[in-house]
Amino acid sequence: MSMNLVNRTLVKNAGHIAGEWCQADSGATIAVYNPATGEPLGQVPDMGVIETRAAIDAASQALAGWSALAPKERARLLRAWYDLIIEHKEDLALLMTLEQGKPLFETRGEVMYGASYIEWYAEEGKRAYGKVFAAPTADKRALSIQQPIGVVAAITPWNFPNAMITRKIAPALAAGCTIVVKPSEETPFSALALMALAEQAGIPAGVINMITSSQAAAVGRVLTDDSRIRKLSFTGSTRVGKLLYAQSAETVKKLSLELGGNAPFIVFDDADLDAAVAGAVISKFRNAGQTCVCANRILVQDGIHDAFVARFKAAVEQLVVGNGLNDATTLGPVINQAAIDKIAGMVDTAQSQGASLVTGGQRHEAGALFFAPTILTGVTQQMDIARQEIFGPVAPIIRFKDDAEAINIANDTPYGLAAYFYTESHSRIWKVAEALEYGMVGINEGILSNEIAPFGGVKESGQGREGSSQGLEDYMETKYLCMGGIR
Image 1 (cartoon, one colour):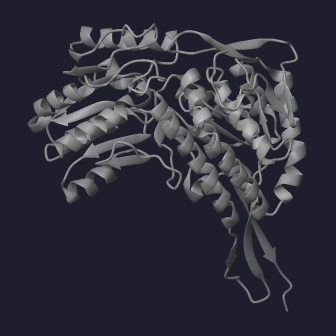
Image 2 (tube, helix red, strand yellow; image 1 turned 45 degrees about the horizontal axis):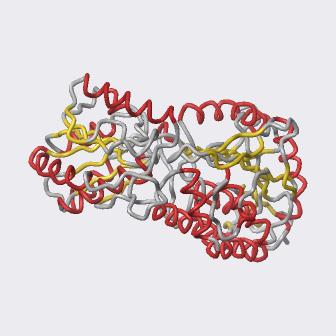
Image 3 (tube, helix red, strand yellow; image 1 turned 180 degrees about the vertical axis):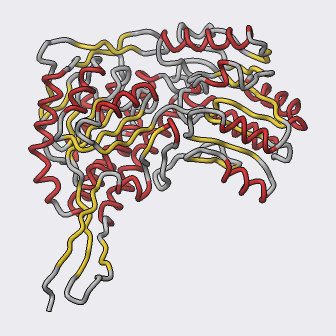
């Protein structure tokens, strides 16, 4: 494996259960490839049902000791983990570019973004306040306390292999929970490097357990069936999220689900055109369009449509497609063969349904998993591409007449994760923001997630929130204490 890391001990070819680095009982492994070159990067164990049960056992045994620690002590350990991540940020970014493909400037940004959740929750964990209520009668006192929900399971995706993990582990640990994490089999090395640094920070054995597996259905079933797991946090597709939701009903788990999106990016005719183009490029093409909050449909008002398309085309054609290790690269590969085949098929179908190709539209000569940044115009809400999550570097543009039509098109989807719009009118800002059926709205802004804000969706895009004080509450239960006989 050709990884030129400064600290080679961050490259782990093992899962982590009860404080031990371990292989799969079966001896099976998963090969991990660099999507930019197709070169093998190494192998990790392909764990299954037995290892998942062992990880739950370990988390259960560690729960009492971890939850009994003073919040200040948990905060100190989280802070030590954060400091180590910052110290190794270049290695973590390099590792992520190698296994996930996104350019180094993006992976450096993700490492800092991921670390910000650990820093935030190290501080926020000390603020799990209870309440004292006005008692109904003079001989009673009523109060509530916040306690950790218990053992937590987290299933994380490949598109943000660092941040999707830290923003689940950090609040869980800050709240006093222990956790079993199943990272994506496409990008396990980023997850295992975080695990190595957590161990180095002194986080006790069994508090974080990490199982690498390609057997998603079998592992998911163990996690949902075990009554000791009191909460499941999942980021991924709506289809799988619904399955986990159904499976969790038997043990009535608390769920945080961050599922698919179909984000509208609306440009009104009074928008700052340069700002809107810059926002659309970063929102759509970040991570090669492989984010659940990226612009999926770009809605442009009649009066500004042609001018926007011309400037957007010029900006998109400036994108540099290539290996993320090259400093000039601004657009990397997509994750695997299935992804690029799906993207190519969607672009072909859109054109057969009447969309016009402005730029791109085909696979790129940079390599097998590269797709040229693409713009389609003449797209309508009836076309397949307007109704599906693209998850690739393809921007469909839909023309609209007025505010009411834009809002109708934007809300005409079962999804409700992120939405964006550009306007200079303060009254339109309020009216449109309130009318959009989305959990998050970017106003004159193409990037909206950060650790201080509640990240999550409505409708079929999920439930629960990550980040902010709400993200901590999602890992805690409220216990009401009623005290009588006070004379």
